[in-house]
Image (cartoon, rainbow over all chains, first blue to last red):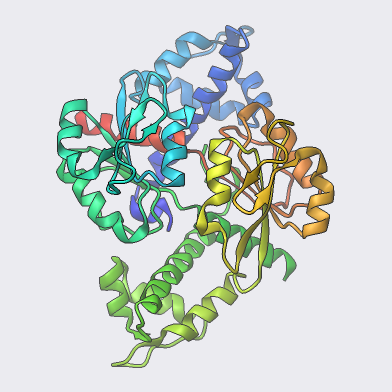
Length: 215
Length: 215
């Protein structure tokens, strides 16, 4: 199912995704030791539109200087703060199957902004095992864990038939947002931000596009 | 980055995602041994809209019988065929890090429609190791592998800085569609279906929504 159907957020979602993309491009340049960049250079290097970049940045009061462009460090700070990424968002991952384990260890999740602080499973055989630096705890302890560690975001990687109960448990425990990888349409709590990621839907879409090409 | 920005396909993408969702709901009912379902029952159980379901199904010439609804088995066949899911689509996964390994083993990918037929990495230390039933082969062999195994879809799980070169290699080797998990904006070949999945963008969007709630 599409995240668009679950969470009606199309317009702001597009802008958000663009800001998120700019941020990634700017960080890549910063890592290369570059300090300034023009909208045209950004556009050329990352297949973007220079006028759109200028318009988006201007919304944050950032205007490039003709000839030298934008200060990358400053721009990164502004974008991070606009996106709420200057704060830390502790995550927990429920469901220590293959996908959950991979996600919990996935380096992209462990930085100053997003950090996996707990991993949970309801299988007693898994509880107590190590995943990276963390020890798997029982799903029953969820309320305590959320309170103790100030968890904001819950990541769901449980099987489809368990997903709704675990989602409800996460929300009851005080989690404020959910990223769901279970291939199921959840009955969501109003006002609680949620996103769903379903690999199979992406594959099915590609299969359909292949069919259209052949037909 | 959003898949919407990469591949301008908004309207059909929405319908596709809905058909894909119906299919999943119908399969779940079939597994429970249920043979018929009304649009209202489907709507109630899966948080969907009954009139929209009837309209979507009617596009395939499927009309429910008042009082007894739709034949689930027949409907599944029709939807599968409409989505190109009655054919097998062999996949390969390039990049046997944690995420790639998890995806390659992920059961959702291994069924009559989508099957992982090869796993690749460019690290000689990984080549020859087993991932599930498959042995990791070197990325240099990609052309041979695509030809031999009739690979249609390439799944990219390599680091960001390697993604473009591997994407180009996949396309040159004859892959017809790409699912990209590398957090980078690829320069895509025109006419070749591609989708990108970026977990970090989803997390950043949730972080922003949390910020908006607080503000």
